[in-house]
Length: 281
Image 1 (spheres, one colour):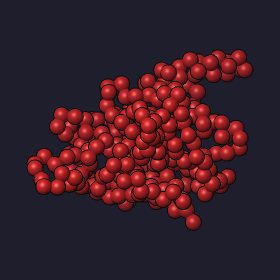
Image 2: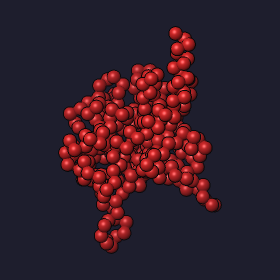
Image 3: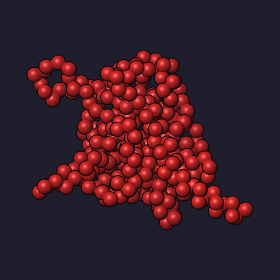
């Protein structure tokens, strides 16, 4: 039986990313985390769909693999999985880098979803949207210590049978209202490892449950950040590989910078749709 508590629904938002890079005489495989994000085009009431991850996850890779589940006619998640492989050319075609050089990018999958839909297959994805992202001016209203949840694939761990991520709970360790070390980032006290890059971090509010409207979130279940790195110890330790149980996260409002870019890139297509509608009137 599928439950509708929002913590369960966030588990469906993430995407296991497996990349390959062909080096001289060898192939390098790596794992990262992505998550679903959609951007609305109000003029035609349509959506574009993306996978968000860190730029360093896909830099120089020759292929990108990910898995999506089908959606039942009842709206629930089906166990049927589809594996997708994007070539280097396809990645570059659908890739948008953050305009300020921040370690963020989005990869469009709208055409993939439309193609499957035309085949009678609807994918079960639960994307974040603009309404789930607190704007910069709202950050001073958060407490200095907030409980948070991160979903992703630390050290490559995941439930590949059910296509589900690992979920971890922690606390914000540096106030959201301040830019840690002058960057639009903050620190979280949470177990973060290689493979967690690109993991979404959400506010953990047990008082909010999802409604049965098909939405995977409420406006009180907010995306606060995206993991970028593991901070290294600032003092000398005998064990050079020591983990600090901390993670560095990019503030989620930086995702909003992609919205005007996507809308501008889709302007010609939207104009064509509007003209077609006007001719049909």
